[in-house]
Image 1: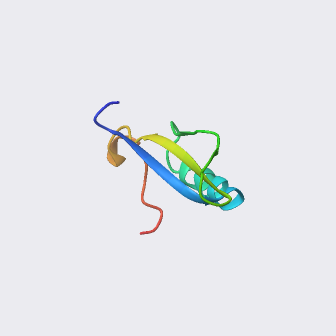
Image 2 (image 1 turned 180 degrees about the vertical axis):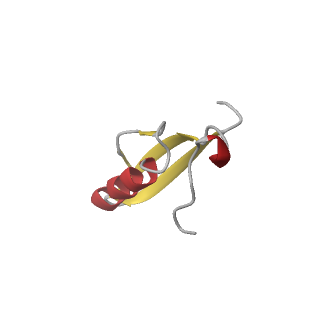
Image 3 (image 1 turned 60 degrees about the vertical axis):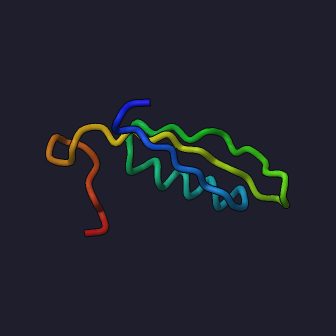
Length: 67
């Protein structure tokens, strides 16, 4: 893991967790969501995303689309 890398964990129903992972992945081109893993409690899954934040925004990295 490098200094610009983070791990995001999403827990929820599979359809919602996968959709959230896809939307987050769109913000970070180098992000690869892991396949959903079933959780023991109920019908929820866990999706992990390893995101490389990469270069700073002024160097062509991610941008804040909420601003």
